[in-house]
Length: 285
Length: 285
Image 1 (tube, one colour):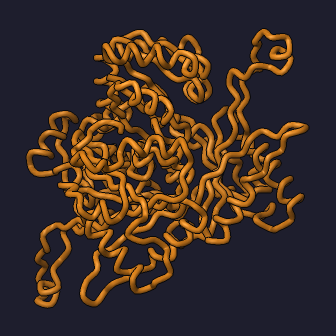
Image 2 (cartoon, chains in turn cyan, brown):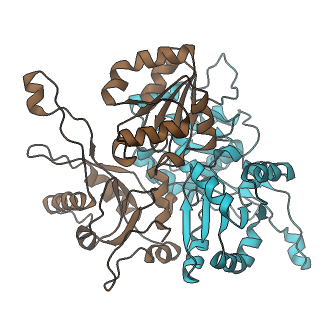
Image 3 (tube, chains in turn blue, red):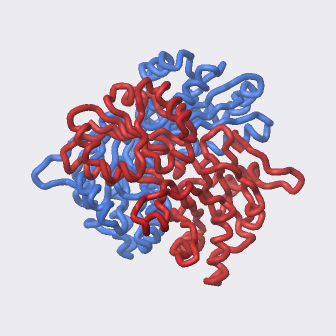
Protein backbone atom coordinates (compact mmCIF):
# COMPACT_ATOMS: atom_id res chain seq x y z
CA UNK A 1 0.00 0.00 0.00
CA UNK A 2 1.21 3.50 -0.87
CA UNK A 3 0.02 6.11 1.60
CA UNK A 4 0.16 9.66 0.28
CA UNK A 5 -0.07 11.79 3.36
CA UNK A 6 -0.62 15.53 3.55
CA UNK A 7 1.43 17.20 6.27
CA UNK A 8 -0.44 20.51 6.31
CA UNK A 9 1.24 23.87 6.19
CA UNK A 10 3.12 24.76 9.34
CA UNK A 11 5.44 22.14 10.74
CA UNK A 12 5.57 18.54 11.94
CA UNK A 13 2.65 19.12 14.30
CA UNK A 14 0.23 19.71 11.45
CA UNK A 15 0.00 16.04 10.52
CA UNK A 16 -3.37 14.49 11.40
CA UNK A 17 -3.72 11.60 13.83
CA UNK A 18 -4.86 9.47 10.88
CA UNK A 19 -1.70 10.44 9.00
CA UNK A 20 0.57 9.77 11.97
CA UNK A 21 -0.98 6.34 12.50
CA UNK A 22 -0.30 5.47 8.86
CA UNK A 23 3.30 6.76 8.95
CA UNK A 24 4.09 4.73 12.03
CA UNK A 25 2.98 1.47 10.43
CA UNK A 26 4.94 2.02 7.21
CA UNK A 27 8.19 0.24 6.57
CA UNK A 28 9.60 3.05 4.48
CA UNK A 29 8.83 6.77 4.68
CA UNK A 30 9.68 9.35 1.98
CA UNK A 31 9.11 13.09 2.13
CA UNK A 32 8.86 15.16 -1.03
CA UNK A 33 11.25 18.07 -1.04
CA UNK A 34 9.71 20.22 -3.79
CA UNK A 35 8.07 22.74 -1.51
CA UNK A 36 8.93 21.34 1.88
CA UNK A 37 12.56 22.47 1.83
CA UNK A 38 11.42 26.04 2.11
CA UNK A 39 8.19 25.91 4.03
CA UNK A 40 9.04 23.25 6.58
CA UNK A 41 12.64 24.38 7.10
CA UNK A 42 13.91 20.94 6.21
CA UNK A 43 17.48 21.22 7.28
CA UNK A 44 18.98 18.15 8.92
CA UNK A 45 17.43 19.46 12.12
CA UNK A 46 14.00 19.63 10.55
CA UNK A 47 14.21 16.05 9.35
CA UNK A 48 15.34 14.75 12.72
CA UNK A 49 12.40 16.54 14.37
CA UNK A 50 10.08 14.71 12.00
CA UNK A 51 11.83 11.40 12.59
CA UNK A 52 11.55 11.78 16.33
CA UNK A 53 7.82 12.53 16.20
CA UNK A 54 7.09 9.86 13.60
CA UNK A 55 9.35 7.31 15.34
CA UNK A 56 10.77 6.22 12.01
CA UNK A 57 13.57 7.22 9.60
CA UNK A 58 12.49 9.61 6.82
CA UNK A 59 14.14 9.78 3.37
CA UNK A 60 14.07 13.12 1.57
CA UNK A 61 12.94 12.59 -2.03
CA UNK A 62 13.80 15.50 -4.27
CA UNK A 63 12.18 16.08 -7.64
CA UNK A 64 14.78 14.02 -9.48
CA UNK A 65 14.46 11.10 -7.13
CA UNK A 66 10.68 11.05 -7.42
CA UNK A 67 10.89 11.21 -11.21
CA UNK A 68 13.76 8.77 -11.66
CA UNK A 69 13.10 6.32 -8.86
CA UNK A 70 9.32 6.30 -8.79
CA UNK A 71 9.24 2.72 -10.03
CA UNK A 72 11.58 1.59 -7.26
CA UNK A 73 9.43 3.35 -4.64
CA UNK A 74 6.29 1.82 -6.13
CA UNK A 75 7.81 -1.67 -6.16
CA UNK A 76 8.45 -1.33 -2.45
CA UNK A 77 4.84 -0.22 -2.01
CA UNK A 78 3.62 -3.36 -3.74
CA UNK A 79 5.23 -5.56 -1.14
CA UNK A 80 4.93 -3.43 1.99
CA UNK A 81 3.46 -0.23 3.39
CA UNK A 82 5.23 2.87 2.10
CA UNK A 83 4.45 6.47 3.02
CA UNK A 84 5.02 9.45 0.75
CA UNK A 85 4.71 12.65 2.76
CA UNK A 86 3.85 15.92 1.07
CA UNK A 87 3.59 19.41 2.48
CA UNK A 88 0.02 20.73 2.37
CA UNK A 89 -2.55 18.43 0.80
CA UNK A 90 -1.58 15.67 -1.67
CA UNK A 91 -3.76 17.24 -4.36
CA UNK A 92 -3.49 20.90 -3.38
CA UNK A 93 -1.17 23.45 -4.95
CA UNK A 94 1.44 20.84 -5.85
CA UNK A 95 -0.35 17.84 -7.19
CA UNK A 96 0.84 14.29 -7.04
CA UNK A 97 -1.53 12.83 -9.61
CA UNK A 98 1.43 11.47 -11.57
CA UNK A 99 2.55 9.24 -8.75
CA UNK A 100 -0.98 7.97 -8.17
CA UNK A 101 -1.49 7.23 -11.86
CA UNK A 102 1.79 5.31 -12.03
CA UNK A 103 0.91 3.40 -8.87
CA UNK A 104 -2.53 2.41 -10.13
CA UNK A 105 -1.07 1.26 -13.46
CA UNK A 106 1.33 -0.99 -11.57
CA UNK A 107 -1.54 -2.32 -9.48
CA UNK A 108 -0.29 -0.69 -6.27
CA UNK A 109 -3.06 0.32 -3.87
CA UNK A 110 -3.08 3.96 -2.83
CA UNK A 111 -4.60 5.67 0.18
CA UNK A 112 -4.67 9.42 0.59
CA UNK A 113 -4.69 11.32 3.88
CA UNK A 114 -6.04 14.83 3.37
CA UNK A 115 -4.77 17.96 5.02
CA UNK A 116 -4.92 21.73 4.69
CA UNK A 117 -3.57 23.28 1.51
CA UNK A 118 -2.69 26.87 0.72
CA UNK A 119 -5.71 26.60 -1.62
CA UNK A 120 -8.11 26.53 1.34
CA UNK A 121 -6.02 28.10 4.11
CA UNK A 122 -6.13 31.51 2.41
CA UNK A 123 -9.76 31.50 3.56
CA UNK A 124 -8.48 32.88 6.87
CA UNK A 125 -8.30 36.41 5.43
CA UNK A 126 -12.09 36.50 5.23
CA UNK A 127 -12.50 36.38 1.46
CA UNK A 128 -14.85 33.48 0.92
CA UNK A 129 -13.41 30.51 -0.91
CA UNK A 130 -16.44 30.05 -3.13
CA UNK A 131 -15.86 33.56 -4.49
CA UNK A 132 -12.48 32.68 -6.02
CA UNK A 133 -11.99 32.20 -9.74
CA UNK A 134 -9.22 30.30 -11.46
CA UNK A 135 -5.89 30.14 -9.58
CA UNK A 136 -2.83 31.50 -11.37
CA UNK A 137 0.91 30.85 -11.08
CA UNK A 138 3.39 33.68 -11.38
CA UNK A 139 6.73 32.39 -12.74
CA UNK A 140 10.06 34.17 -12.28
CA UNK A 141 10.72 36.39 -15.29
CA UNK A 142 14.13 36.07 -16.92
CA UNK A 143 15.80 38.28 -19.54
CA UNK A 144 14.34 36.18 -22.32
CA UNK A 145 11.32 34.44 -20.77
CA UNK A 146 8.47 36.58 -19.52
CA UNK A 147 5.30 34.49 -19.86
CA UNK A 148 2.15 36.38 -18.93
CA UNK A 149 -0.71 33.96 -19.44
CA UNK A 150 -1.79 34.74 -15.88
CA UNK A 151 -2.93 38.16 -17.12
CA UNK A 152 -6.03 36.98 -19.03
CA UNK A 153 -6.99 34.69 -16.16
CA UNK A 154 -6.84 37.50 -13.60
CA UNK A 155 -8.75 39.70 -16.03
CA UNK A 156 -11.41 37.01 -16.46
CA UNK A 157 -11.80 36.55 -12.72
CA UNK A 158 -12.00 40.27 -12.07
CA UNK A 159 -14.61 40.81 -14.77
CA UNK A 160 -16.78 38.35 -12.82
CA UNK A 161 -15.98 40.04 -9.50
CA UNK A 162 -14.01 37.00 -8.30
CA UNK A 163 -10.86 36.86 -6.16
CA UNK A 164 -7.65 35.41 -7.63
CA UNK A 165 -5.13 33.31 -5.73
CA UNK A 166 -1.63 33.80 -7.17
CA UNK A 167 0.81 31.01 -6.41
CA UNK A 168 4.36 32.34 -6.55
CA UNK A 169 7.28 30.57 -8.16
CA UNK A 170 9.57 28.27 -6.19
CA UNK A 171 12.87 27.11 -7.62
CA UNK A 172 14.44 24.33 -5.66
CA UNK A 173 17.36 22.27 -6.90
CA UNK A 174 17.27 23.67 -10.43
CA UNK A 175 20.31 22.62 -12.46
CA UNK A 176 22.23 25.74 -13.51
CA UNK A 177 22.36 26.57 -17.21
CA UNK A 178 26.15 26.54 -17.20
CA UNK A 179 26.31 23.14 -15.55
CA UNK A 180 23.87 21.67 -18.07
CA UNK A 181 26.13 22.96 -20.87
CA UNK A 182 29.09 21.27 -19.24
CA UNK A 183 27.10 18.05 -18.93
CA UNK A 184 27.52 17.86 -15.18
CA UNK A 185 24.64 18.86 -12.97
CA UNK A 186 25.23 21.64 -10.49
CA UNK A 187 22.39 23.34 -8.74
CA UNK A 188 21.28 26.93 -8.40
CA UNK A 189 20.64 28.03 -4.82
CA UNK A 190 16.92 27.69 -3.96
CA UNK A 191 14.81 30.74 -4.82
CA UNK A 192 11.28 31.64 -3.91
CA UNK A 193 9.31 34.57 -5.24
CA UNK A 194 8.43 37.30 -2.77
CA UNK A 195 5.15 39.17 -2.83
CA UNK A 196 7.13 42.28 -3.80
CA UNK A 197 8.56 40.64 -6.92
CA UNK A 198 5.17 39.20 -7.84
CA UNK A 199 3.54 42.64 -7.70
CA UNK A 200 6.42 44.15 -9.66
CA UNK A 201 5.94 41.56 -12.41
CA UNK A 202 2.16 41.96 -12.36
CA UNK A 203 2.41 45.72 -12.80
CA UNK A 204 5.00 45.32 -15.54
CA UNK A 205 2.62 43.09 -17.50
CA UNK A 206 -0.28 45.48 -16.90
CA UNK A 207 1.83 48.31 -18.26
CA UNK A 208 2.65 46.33 -21.43
CA UNK A 209 -0.88 45.02 -21.98
CA UNK A 210 -2.64 48.17 -20.85
CA UNK A 211 -6.05 46.51 -20.59
CA UNK A 212 -6.70 47.72 -17.02
CA UNK A 213 -7.12 44.30 -15.47
CA UNK A 214 -5.70 45.84 -12.28
CA UNK A 215 -3.47 48.69 -11.19
CA UNK A 216 -1.39 49.98 -8.27
CA UNK A 217 -4.57 50.77 -6.34
CA UNK A 218 -6.03 47.28 -6.66
CA UNK A 219 -6.68 45.67 -3.28
CA UNK A 220 -4.68 42.55 -2.48
CA UNK A 221 -3.83 40.32 0.46
CA UNK A 222 -0.30 39.09 1.00
CA UNK A 223 0.36 35.87 2.94
CA UNK A 224 3.72 34.68 4.24
CA UNK A 225 4.40 31.36 5.98
CA UNK A 226 0.70 30.49 6.10
CA UNK A 227 0.03 27.99 8.86
CA UNK A 228 3.29 28.50 10.71
CA UNK A 229 3.45 30.21 14.08
CA UNK A 230 4.76 33.45 12.60
CA UNK A 231 2.41 33.61 9.62
CA UNK A 232 1.90 37.12 8.31
CA UNK A 233 -1.21 38.38 6.53
CA UNK A 234 -1.47 41.95 5.29
CA UNK A 235 -4.24 43.52 3.21
CA UNK A 236 -3.61 46.64 1.16
CA UNK A 237 -3.23 47.98 -2.35
CA UNK A 238 -0.52 46.66 -4.65
CA UNK A 239 1.38 49.89 -4.03
CA UNK A 240 1.17 49.44 -0.26
CA UNK A 241 2.08 45.76 -0.23
CA UNK A 242 5.07 46.38 -2.46
CA UNK A 243 6.67 48.23 0.45
CA UNK A 244 6.00 45.54 3.06
CA UNK A 245 8.79 43.17 4.06
CA UNK A 246 7.05 39.81 4.36
CA UNK A 247 10.22 38.00 5.45
CA UNK A 248 10.95 34.33 4.99
CA UNK A 249 9.18 32.09 2.43
CA UNK A 250 6.70 30.88 1.34
CA UNK A 251 4.65 33.79 0.06
CA UNK A 252 1.40 33.94 -1.88
CA UNK A 253 -0.87 36.73 -3.01
CA UNK A 254 -4.60 37.18 -3.44
CA UNK A 255 -5.99 39.83 -5.77
CA UNK A 256 -9.28 40.93 -4.28
CA UNK A 257 -12.41 40.94 -6.46
CA UNK A 258 -15.78 42.37 -5.55
CA UNK A 259 -16.34 42.04 -1.81
CA UNK A 260 -19.39 41.42 0.33
CA UNK A 261 -19.80 43.36 3.59
CA UNK A 262 -18.98 40.28 5.70
CA UNK A 263 -15.74 39.84 3.74
CA UNK A 264 -14.89 43.51 4.15
CA UNK A 265 -15.37 43.38 7.89
CA UNK A 266 -12.92 40.51 8.26
CA UNK A 267 -10.43 41.94 5.78
CA UNK A 268 -10.35 45.19 7.76
CA UNK A 269 -8.49 43.47 10.58
CA UNK A 270 -5.59 42.79 8.24
CA UNK A 271 -5.50 46.20 6.59
CA UNK A 272 -2.43 48.37 6.82
CA UNK A 273 -3.13 51.28 9.12
CA UNK A 274 -1.15 54.41 8.43
CA UNK A 275 -0.10 54.79 12.04
CA UNK A 276 0.73 51.17 12.76
CA UNK A 277 3.69 49.36 11.34
CA UNK A 278 2.81 45.98 9.85
CA UNK A 279 3.84 43.21 12.16
CA UNK A 280 3.83 39.47 12.23
CA UNK A 281 0.48 38.09 13.20
CA UNK A 282 0.19 34.42 14.00
CA UNK A 283 -3.45 34.72 14.85
CA UNK A 284 -6.62 35.12 12.87
CA UNK A 285 -6.95 38.80 12.06
CA UNK B 1 -7.96 32.92 23.68
CA UNK B 2 -10.52 31.46 21.23
CA UNK B 3 -9.13 28.55 19.25
CA UNK B 4 -11.07 27.79 16.08
CA UNK B 5 -9.97 24.32 15.15
CA UNK B 6 -10.64 22.48 11.92
CA UNK B 7 -11.39 18.79 12.44
CA UNK B 8 -10.95 17.70 8.82
CA UNK B 9 -13.43 15.57 6.96
CA UNK B 10 -13.57 11.99 8.14
CA UNK B 11 -13.84 11.44 11.86
CA UNK B 12 -12.14 12.24 15.17
CA UNK B 13 -8.79 10.99 13.87
CA UNK B 14 -8.55 13.77 11.29
CA UNK B 15 -7.67 16.43 13.83
CA UNK B 16 -4.04 17.59 13.59
CA UNK B 17 -1.56 17.20 16.44
CA UNK B 18 -1.52 21.00 16.69
CA UNK B 19 -5.32 20.99 17.02
CA UNK B 20 -5.34 18.21 19.59
CA UNK B 21 -2.73 20.01 21.68
CA UNK B 22 -4.88 23.16 21.69
CA UNK B 23 -8.09 21.26 22.56
CA UNK B 24 -6.44 19.55 25.49
CA UNK B 25 -5.36 22.81 27.07
CA UNK B 26 -8.76 24.50 26.70
CA UNK B 27 -11.09 24.84 29.65
CA UNK B 28 -14.20 24.65 27.53
CA UNK B 29 -14.70 22.89 24.19
CA UNK B 30 -17.60 23.48 21.79
CA UNK B 31 -18.28 21.67 18.53
CA UNK B 32 -20.40 23.23 15.82
CA UNK B 33 -23.23 21.00 14.73
CA UNK B 34 -24.15 22.63 11.40
CA UNK B 35 -22.50 20.08 9.19
CA UNK B 36 -20.97 17.76 11.73
CA UNK B 37 -24.23 16.07 12.68
CA UNK B 38 -24.31 14.45 9.30
CA UNK B 39 -20.71 14.02 8.30
CA UNK B 40 -19.20 13.02 11.62
CA UNK B 41 -22.14 10.87 12.75
CA UNK B 42 -22.52 12.90 15.91
CA UNK B 43 -24.88 10.73 17.89
CA UNK B 44 -24.21 10.48 21.62
CA UNK B 45 -21.73 7.76 20.70
CA UNK B 46 -19.92 10.07 18.31
CA UNK B 47 -19.53 12.75 20.93
CA UNK B 48 -18.23 10.33 23.53
CA UNK B 49 -15.64 9.05 21.03
CA UNK B 50 -14.45 12.63 20.61
CA UNK B 51 -14.44 13.25 24.35
CA UNK B 52 -12.39 10.14 24.97
CA UNK B 53 -9.77 11.10 22.39
CA UNK B 54 -9.68 14.76 23.41
CA UNK B 55 -9.73 13.89 27.14
CA UNK B 56 -12.24 16.66 27.80
CA UNK B 57 -16.02 17.18 27.73
CA UNK B 58 -17.38 18.57 24.45
CA UNK B 59 -20.54 20.72 24.17
CA UNK B 60 -22.49 20.50 20.93
CA UNK B 61 -23.31 24.01 19.71
CA UNK B 62 -26.12 24.06 17.18
CA UNK B 63 -26.80 26.99 14.90
CA UNK B 64 -29.13 28.66 17.38
CA UNK B 65 -26.70 28.34 20.23
CA UNK B 66 -23.85 29.83 18.21
CA UNK B 67 -26.05 32.72 17.11
CA UNK B 68 -27.75 33.36 20.42
CA UNK B 69 -24.98 32.59 22.85
CA UNK B 70 -21.95 33.76 20.90
CA UNK B 71 -21.37 36.58 23.36
CA UNK B 72 -21.40 34.17 26.29
CA UNK B 73 -18.92 31.88 24.53
CA UNK B 74 -16.73 34.87 23.70
CA UNK B 75 -16.82 36.13 27.28
CA UNK B 76 -15.50 32.78 28.42
CA UNK B 77 -12.76 33.05 25.78
CA UNK B 78 -11.67 36.39 27.17
CA UNK B 79 -10.89 34.88 30.53
CA UNK B 80 -9.71 31.41 29.57
CA UNK B 81 -8.85 29.16 26.63
CA UNK B 82 -11.94 28.08 24.71
CA UNK B 83 -12.00 25.80 21.67
CA UNK B 84 -14.60 25.94 18.92
CA UNK B 85 -14.34 22.82 16.77
CA UNK B 86 -15.60 22.82 13.21
CA UNK B 87 -15.79 20.03 10.68
CA UNK B 88 -13.46 20.62 7.73
CA UNK B 89 -11.50 23.85 7.78
CA UNK B 90 -12.64 26.92 9.79
CA UNK B 91 -12.82 28.98 6.59
CA UNK B 92 -13.71 26.27 4.10
CA UNK B 93 -17.18 25.49 2.79
CA UNK B 94 -18.88 26.66 5.98
CA UNK B 95 -17.20 29.84 7.08
CA UNK B 96 -16.91 31.09 10.59
CA UNK B 97 -15.90 34.65 9.78
CA UNK B 98 -18.83 35.96 11.83
CA UNK B 99 -17.53 34.44 15.04
CA UNK B 100 -14.01 35.76 14.38
CA UNK B 101 -15.30 39.26 13.63
CA UNK B 102 -17.37 39.30 16.83
CA UNK B 103 -14.40 38.01 18.82
CA UNK B 104 -12.03 40.65 17.47
CA UNK B 105 -14.55 43.41 18.17
CA UNK B 106 -14.72 42.26 21.78
CA UNK B 107 -10.94 42.17 21.97
CA UNK B 108 -10.78 38.38 22.24
CA UNK B 109 -7.68 36.85 20.69
CA UNK B 110 -8.29 34.20 18.06
CA UNK B 111 -6.07 31.41 16.77
CA UNK B 112 -7.02 29.22 13.84
CA UNK B 113 -5.89 25.64 13.28
CA UNK B 114 -6.23 24.73 9.60
CA UNK B 115 -7.38 21.41 8.23
CA UNK B 116 -8.65 19.84 5.03
CA UNK B 117 -11.88 21.19 3.56
CA UNK B 118 -14.14 19.73 0.91
CA UNK B 119 -12.88 22.72 -1.14
CA UNK B 120 -9.43 21.16 -1.46
CA UNK B 121 -10.14 17.47 -0.82
CA UNK B 122 -12.04 17.17 -4.11
CA UNK B 123 -8.56 17.42 -5.66
CA UNK B 124 -8.30 13.65 -5.14
CA UNK B 125 -10.33 12.99 -8.30
CA UNK B 126 -7.47 14.33 -10.41
CA UNK B 127 -9.08 17.54 -11.63
CA UNK B 128 -6.57 20.20 -10.70
CA UNK B 129 -7.69 22.69 -8.08
CA UNK B 130 -6.30 25.66 -9.95
CA UNK B 131 -8.62 24.82 -12.87
CA UNK B 132 -11.80 25.38 -10.84
CA UNK B 133 -13.96 28.45 -11.28
CA UNK B 134 -16.43 29.88 -8.80
CA UNK B 135 -18.01 27.38 -6.40
CA UNK B 136 -21.82 27.15 -6.41
CA UNK B 137 -24.40 26.04 -3.85
CA UNK B 138 -27.44 24.06 -4.91
CA UNK B 139 -30.37 24.72 -2.54
CA UNK B 140 -33.34 22.37 -2.10
CA UNK B 141 -36.14 23.47 -4.42
CA UNK B 142 -39.58 23.80 -2.86
CA UNK B 143 -42.96 24.27 -4.52
CA UNK B 144 -42.59 28.02 -4.38
CA UNK B 145 -38.83 28.64 -4.11
CA UNK B 146 -36.63 27.49 -6.97
CA UNK B 147 -33.64 29.83 -7.03
CA UNK B 148 -31.27 29.15 -9.92
CA UNK B 149 -28.49 31.71 -9.64
CA UNK B 150 -26.03 28.81 -9.79
CA UNK B 151 -26.88 28.45 -13.47
CA UNK B 152 -25.05 31.58 -14.70
CA UNK B 153 -22.06 30.73 -12.54
CA UNK B 154 -21.75 27.23 -13.98
CA UNK B 155 -22.23 28.69 -17.44
CA UNK B 156 -19.48 31.25 -16.79
CA UNK B 157 -17.07 28.59 -15.54
CA UNK B 158 -17.78 26.28 -18.44
CA UNK B 159 -17.31 29.03 -21.01
CA UNK B 160 -13.77 29.39 -19.60
CA UNK B 161 -13.24 25.63 -19.58
CA UNK B 162 -13.18 25.55 -15.77
CA UNK B 163 -14.50 22.89 -13.40
CA UNK B 164 -17.32 23.74 -10.98
CA UNK B 165 -17.65 22.46 -7.43
CA UNK B 166 -21.32 22.24 -6.41
CA UNK B 167 -21.95 22.24 -2.68
CA UNK B 168 -25.26 20.53 -1.93
CA UNK B 169 -27.84 21.77 0.54
CA UNK B 170 -27.88 20.59 4.16
CA UNK B 171 -30.87 21.23 6.39
CA UNK B 172 -30.19 20.53 10.03
CA UNK B 173 -32.48 21.58 12.85
CA UNK B 174 -34.73 23.73 10.68
CA UNK B 175 -37.85 24.87 12.53
CA UNK B 176 -40.93 23.51 10.74
CA UNK B 177 -43.27 26.03 9.10
CA UNK B 178 -46.23 24.76 11.11
CA UNK B 179 -44.39 25.07 14.40
CA UNK B 180 -43.33 28.65 13.59
CA UNK B 181 -47.00 29.48 12.96
CA UNK B 182 -47.91 28.04 16.32
CA UNK B 183 -45.13 30.07 17.94
CA UNK B 184 -43.42 27.01 19.37
CA UNK B 185 -40.32 25.71 17.67
CA UNK B 186 -40.37 22.14 16.47
CA UNK B 187 -37.77 20.82 14.12
CA UNK B 188 -37.88 19.14 10.72
CA UNK B 189 -35.84 15.95 10.51
CA UNK B 190 -32.35 16.67 9.09
CA UNK B 191 -32.09 16.53 5.30
CA UNK B 192 -29.13 16.50 2.99
CA UNK B 193 -29.20 16.75 -0.77
CA UNK B 194 -28.12 13.68 -2.70
CA UNK B 195 -26.15 13.87 -5.93
CA UNK B 196 -29.23 12.44 -7.66
CA UNK B 197 -31.44 15.31 -6.51
CA UNK B 198 -28.78 17.87 -7.39
CA UNK B 199 -28.53 16.56 -10.96
CA UNK B 200 -32.33 16.45 -11.25
CA UNK B 201 -32.54 20.11 -10.22
CA UNK B 202 -29.64 21.09 -12.50
CA UNK B 203 -31.30 19.46 -15.51
CA UNK B 204 -34.64 21.02 -14.63
CA UNK B 205 -33.07 24.50 -14.66
CA UNK B 206 -31.24 23.75 -17.91
CA UNK B 207 -34.56 22.75 -19.48
CA UNK B 208 -36.19 26.00 -18.39
CA UNK B 209 -33.26 28.26 -19.33
CA UNK B 210 -32.31 26.32 -22.44
CA UNK B 211 -28.95 28.05 -22.83
CA UNK B 212 -26.97 24.80 -23.09
CA UNK B 213 -24.70 25.41 -20.10
CA UNK B 214 -24.68 21.62 -19.68
CA UNK B 215 -26.81 18.59 -20.48
CA UNK B 216 -27.33 14.94 -19.59
CA UNK B 217 -24.07 14.03 -21.32
CA UNK B 218 -21.95 16.49 -19.36
CA UNK B 219 -19.15 14.80 -17.43
CA UNK B 220 -19.30 15.08 -13.66
CA UNK B 221 -17.72 13.57 -10.57
CA UNK B 222 -19.84 12.60 -7.58
CA UNK B 223 -18.30 12.45 -4.10
CA UNK B 224 -19.89 10.92 -1.01
CA UNK B 225 -18.46 10.95 2.51
CA UNK B 226 -15.19 12.50 1.33
CA UNK B 227 -12.42 11.76 3.80
CA UNK B 228 -14.19 8.95 5.62
CA UNK B 229 -13.12 5.36 5.31
CA UNK B 230 -15.97 4.48 2.96
CA UNK B 231 -15.72 7.55 0.74
CA UNK B 232 -17.13 7.01 -2.73
CA UNK B 233 -16.01 8.81 -5.87
CA UNK B 234 -17.60 8.10 -9.24
CA UNK B 235 -17.00 9.88 -12.54
CA UNK B 236 -19.58 9.77 -15.31
CA UNK B 237 -22.15 11.78 -17.22
CA UNK B 238 -25.06 13.42 -15.42
CA UNK B 239 -27.28 10.69 -16.84
CA UNK B 240 -25.01 7.95 -15.50
CA UNK B 241 -24.52 9.47 -12.04
CA UNK B 242 -28.23 9.99 -11.64
CA UNK B 243 -28.60 6.20 -11.45
CA UNK B 244 -25.83 5.67 -8.87
CA UNK B 245 -26.75 5.17 -5.23
CA UNK B 246 -24.12 7.16 -3.34
CA UNK B 247 -25.50 6.17 0.06
CA UNK B 248 -25.12 8.15 3.25
CA UNK B 249 -24.30 11.89 3.38
CA UNK B 250 -22.51 14.19 2.74
CA UNK B 251 -22.52 14.40 -1.03
CA UNK B 252 -21.00 16.94 -3.40
CA UNK B 253 -20.70 17.19 -7.15
CA UNK B 254 -18.12 18.51 -9.58
CA UNK B 255 -19.10 19.50 -13.12
CA UNK B 256 -16.07 18.82 -15.29
CA UNK B 257 -14.75 21.59 -17.54
CA UNK B 258 -12.08 21.23 -20.18
CA UNK B 259 -9.60 18.57 -19.13
CA UNK B 260 -5.86 18.15 -19.60
CA UNK B 261 -4.48 14.70 -20.42
CA UNK B 262 -3.02 14.28 -16.90
CA UNK B 263 -6.46 15.04 -15.43
CA UNK B 264 -8.12 12.59 -17.82
CA UNK B 265 -5.74 9.81 -16.87
CA UNK B 266 -6.55 10.15 -13.18
CA UNK B 267 -10.27 10.63 -13.76
CA UNK B 268 -10.37 7.37 -15.75
CA UNK B 269 -9.82 5.37 -12.58
CA UNK B 270 -13.10 6.67 -11.21
CA UNK B 271 -15.13 6.23 -14.38
CA UNK B 272 -18.14 3.97 -14.44
CA UNK B 273 -17.35 0.90 -16.50
CA UNK B 274 -20.31 -0.74 -18.16
CA UNK B 275 -19.41 -4.17 -16.88
CA UNK B 276 -18.52 -3.20 -13.33
CA UNK B 277 -20.99 -2.10 -10.74
CA UNK B 278 -19.96 1.07 -8.92
CA UNK B 279 -18.65 0.26 -5.50
CA UNK B 280 -17.40 2.09 -2.49
CA UNK B 281 -13.79 3.06 -2.83
CA UNK B 282 -11.95 4.30 0.17
CA UNK B 283 -8.75 4.65 -1.71
CA UNK B 284 -7.44 7.10 -4.23
CA UNK B 285 -8.72 6.06 -7.62
